[in-house]
Image (cartoon, rainbow, N blue to C red; front, side, top):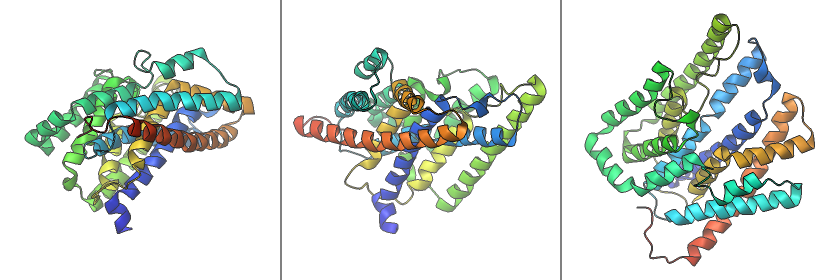
Length: 340
């Protein structure tokens, strides 16, 4: 087990699981299960809303993982990752068209023109962060760990206190949130020796419990105050204070004691693909169309079918993405500037 931790295999495994959760989050909750349309709280509703809150942590976790990995990794070039996104996306969509007979011209445009169509907004933020990663790391070293923590907390608390999207995070699906979470990952890597596994485990469990309590409390407050559940999801989106802080602690904990990454670079590819598939609307739309064609009505059916579809998406998508990036890496001049 120690060897797995030191080589980063355990960390990569968690990233793969988070990638799967991110896809499932987009597909299952995008199917609008009837339990979320409840007009009053019930045990089933509490289970559903808490599950949504916890599974949503996967997106900020993946973006931070990309920042953490990129700050230490020298194996992939910036434009290879971006070109791989376009080519892998197109390849996956062709597979979907051939097997499931689905087609949407809007999805084709989203895949081919990801920047102009803002298809993967958080990934664009990751690209911006990667371009400035060296000076940012130097700044992080100068300002210190505590000041970084205070800044992050302030940025997260301001929208919560004023109930306004002050920093244009758009619930987590924006360029600015992608950049913000990516830089948190870089900071976590810069100060990775600050990690204390026992302390971080305790904090992580406490944050999960706090998230559950906050979600239940907001549901009750919404029901009493507004006679509806419109405010029940206050802490559910993946740019919320609890989601981001929980994701950051999870990164520190799973990466503790890691010396290096395994040779197959699974963490980087899985993280990138997870954010791509979890935030790209064409992915969830296409997978939902497949689920609807199968014929699902109840929440249980949606849960099972979307889980199976998400697993298939991640397995096939990762394989395609790995092949595309490998081919591009071999074709391009190896002397080009790589992530530093």
